[in-house]
Length: 390
Image (cartoon, rainbow, N blue to C red; front, side):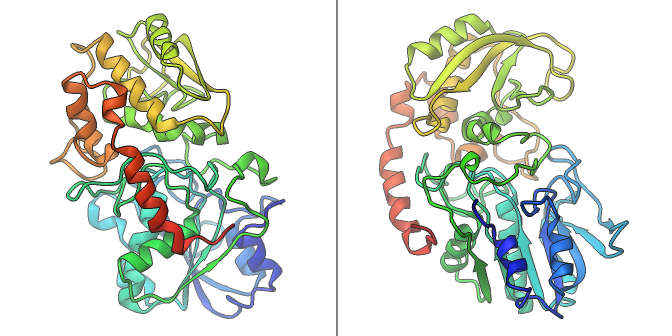
């Protein structure tokens, strides 16, 4: 079994935290193999736990996407829980007075390996704030559920940074959260005392189902490791009026809308012969979110070969097929997205306007993805100094 940074910290008799005033940035998936939460582990290791910090979805992971959460007092531990996903852009960054009460900020967050997932950016904003207050940061590393080898997609174009990408990364970056902390700290030249407590027994080829670790939902719509596999492509649907499957039991794997012909869509996608994926037509009725209570046609993607599956490429192919089928019905999201209202959500997700503009002129999948290989090779070299494994 892979040993997480949290398990290593506790096994080390807590020498890094004993007697220190510790703040913990965490969520419900910050557990050890016995499902004991990191807050309990830190207390058992002798830490003085004085505050919790909660990313998007709140400390209990109950809030849906993009729902602001207020700070509170933890009902069992009696310590403040500072929300780092409130009701404004400023609320994403911890206040200096919160950090000055600490001897150490510990970060224990299960990421899902896609640049859009906001937990890594909460960590980065906390690191920036700690650099200004002189607060040391200890990141307890966890596996990248997608493995650490594959890189997929372009980076972020200047001017398209947002809370779904505050630093230039491809959509699928192949980094653990600890490696990502090392990369961003160095590239942004943060004056920060940063330590990453690495995993034991993890190799870059390992996906989550091979780690022996329990999967706990890190957010309400990430129920299984299979969801994480689909997410790099399925999340693009957040930038559209097509359902990405929220309100179903298989979010990001089920996609559709009331105007979609699922059989036609599945046939067109199957004809592309994309690696590692099969497409099944279906009907579904979302219980909440887009098209709540309405019968939608669409597809469910089934990952047949996880090692071959190119999730982002498949997601771009899916969008292109949807737009070809119903260009008059499909539309881009116009509402504010992650506190941004001056750029379309799809541009923030894609890291630039290339996807939206390409679909507008009927670009093929090959044309839309033509620049990816060079960008992926560039990032592979960029990330190399910060890798901790293999």
